[in-house]
Image (cartoon, rainbow, N blue to C red; front, side):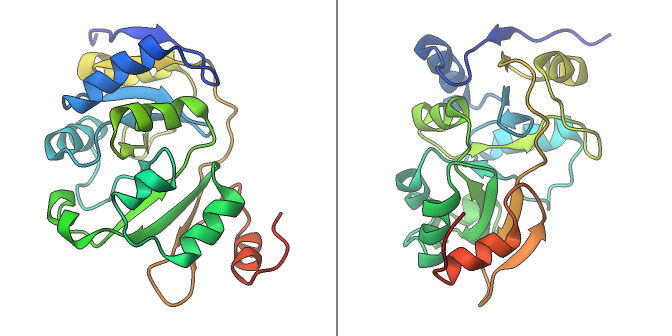
Length: 217
């Protein structure tokens, strides 16, 4: 039986600063944590840290050519990864962020080698305060891949994360049972027209309406 990982209870809407600081310190030093988002529990690490990303791929059994989605605290933090921020992103951010909408956007050219050579990143601002605070205090884009073995069901609570990964993680933040909301909508903004990659809580037609300047939901 796998050894267990340290689990720390946290308030997801009013996260205790000392707990966020503890987790952020681990992240800044290459650690990998389990933490709740509004859709499921995720595996969090510094998205720019190649060793930390490699750990996530290894413990999930995930193919390395599959990009890891990223949570940022706000548009200012996104600007450190994607600059200039396209107008389409600004429009959709104003309408749907924070929330379960992931956008595939251009990655800064000078960062592409550090991300394994990819020209784009999949990014969102989470609807959960805890996730945003982790990104803000860690001062980095925070990986947000679901906390499960590749192909398995995403974990809905801290116990499931611990049972799945044991001490392969450095810490698990226990924010209680997540709502079970469907995984985020993913929209690719790299081409001339938006492309729906995964349907989710944010309806694609509403995204198109917002980009046309029609009344946003």
